[in-house]
Image (cartoon, rainbow, N blue to C red; front, side, top):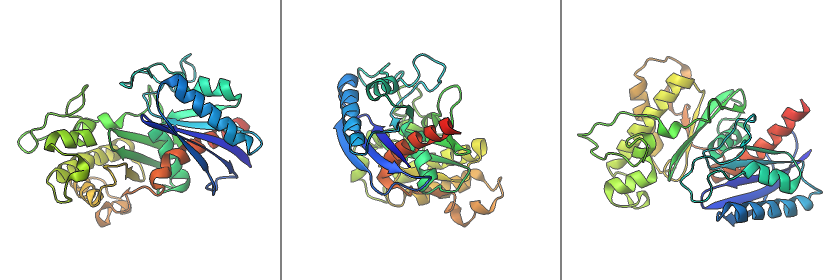
Length: 305
């Protein structure tokens, strides 16, 4: 039985929690506190103070997991390991998230991206439970993609940046040039919430379910799903987020993904309209914090192995 602290560090708020965990069972009771994301110094100090308080009620923490917005430096051999790298959020570039919390609390701190954390949580306790490989996609203000293989979040040269996959845009059908300041009409540039609003002049939340833009978004996310299948061959793709959870959108994504796959891959899970392959989250809005808990637990498993 281990006492794990968790931080879901977002661009506007941080959710801090702690739970007593045993084995791979989903924690039944997680006490949480929400903290506004202001400056790195103030936010991380308040996170550490809250973790110290929550952990004190349990007799102290054994480890902390952090699922953070990024980009992050996740190479443990680099001196800036656990820090935020290039980010448009003012003041946060170079913020030493992991080191700050580890030094303040005196316990091991595991860190990964928010989407890798959510992917790990969905694999432990949610819609991808029991699978060896899966992908978690969040579609909202931006688009993030977390990849888990063999029960572990994937890193390489950097962490996955699937939101910037290049997709095919038909200018006659969709003249919008794209929202992304780096790539224009990449996936995020075409299908995130701000891209939808810029294209139609209204927030996505105000659009009817049959608005034509949803078929465009479904097509771009369907292309993403087909590309992920071809490149990574995951057993399941979980799609969530404020835009990703839009009623009826997953059906459009499945339809277009099946069209883009074109019958090339023959597998039983790719039948019945891909309903078993592209699915909604099992943890809902708790995926990020659950992922942070899973990161802390996984770190302790690695150390004790």
